[in-house]
Image 1: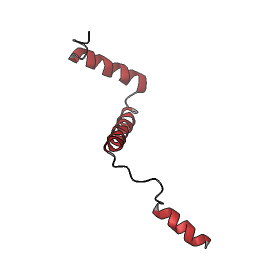
Image 2: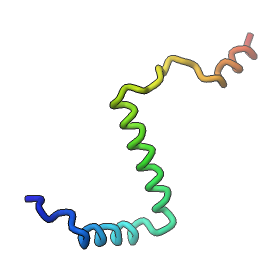
Image 3: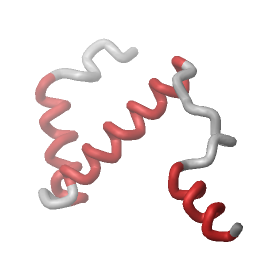
Image 4: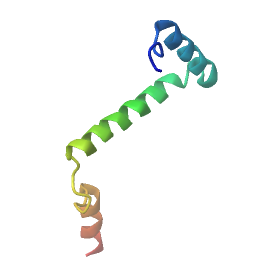
Length: 67
């Protein structure tokens, strides 16, 4: 069913359609966003996420000012 789905001519045609829809200026932004989402997905699947209850360094400074 999917034997000849990703032939080189098909990929070129898909890239041309994407270029027409989004334009050349937005393609780097789309690629960067796609790369970040793939990296975060891989981290989530491997369990390398940091605990979310751990406050960041900026929150410590705010807590000290309140005291």
